[in-house]
Amino acid sequence: MTSDLARKNLEKQGYKFTGKHSSTKICHWTKSSVSGKKSCYKNKFYNIQSNQCAQMTTNMFCSNLCDFCWRDIPTSNNIKMDLIDDPEDIINNTIKEQLKTIMGLGGNPNTDKKKFEESKKIKHFAISLTGEPTMYPRLGELIKKLHEKNITSFLVTNGQYPKSLEKLEKENSLPTQIYLSLDAPTKEIYYNLDKPMLKDFWERFNKTLDIINRIKDKTRTVLRITSVKLRNMCNEEDYAKLIEKANPKFLEIKGFTLLGPSGEKLTLENVPSYDEVKQFAKNINKHCGYRLVDEDHSSRVILLMKENTKERFLDS
Image 1 (cartoon, helix red, strand yellow):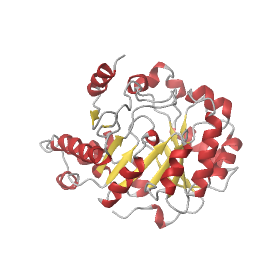
Image 2 (image 1 turned 30 degrees about the vertical axis):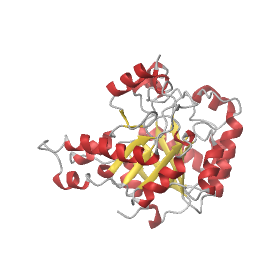
Image 3 (image 1 turned 180 degrees about the vertical axis):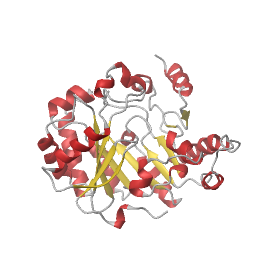
């Protein structure tokens, strides 16, 4: 598949390219919030304003082919980083595309007028749309520019590029909050579920766990488990060991949702109920020093911390 065809396929899915290898796509929760409906669970957990959040990525390629991923990875992986996009251009183009979509909601009679007006000023960048953003060599520059514009940054990583995180630390360009996907409790389960392309995937992931521990006083750190029934909701004691190794500020345990290409690999049998996710969280909690501090039933997600503090809420 050529990159031109890949771009066309992704654009049909709602992706807006912000460069050669970067893109944005308005989040369901952003539209929901502007429309006067429910906000993302991150609003409840951390006070992130859904109507002012832009979902984007700096790189569409991913080194993992996770069975549970709802994104179109085979298509995205045909977008190459032949020419490196400029960080300022990525930011400006992301905001431009977000506002174009937001403006289209203005005529909806159900739109929350206050939130609609607020949405014209973007306050958060969720660097998590698709692909592995830490592969982008100028990520630190982009994060610094966001912070200079008073825009917070939320970076999601699969942990396969620890040197990139070390670079962010060295450059003093860590994001406001960093999410590390903790998809499996053991090397074997990780291999079977995440389908990593890199041979030393487990060593890379464990090195990233160490980095998360090291930077915990420099930024907000999160481990997030996507709970896939019959696949990774097991070995709770092994999960606890990895959690203790990273010692994150937050631990999110979220239920898998059958969306997009994940339906080609998984079925409804792999979708856990809210009660099953909550019990799984409690089982993990038995083996580590975290406790349940918040939950969102509709998103089937549990938030755990060692100690619940007001500092978990960002200034609005």
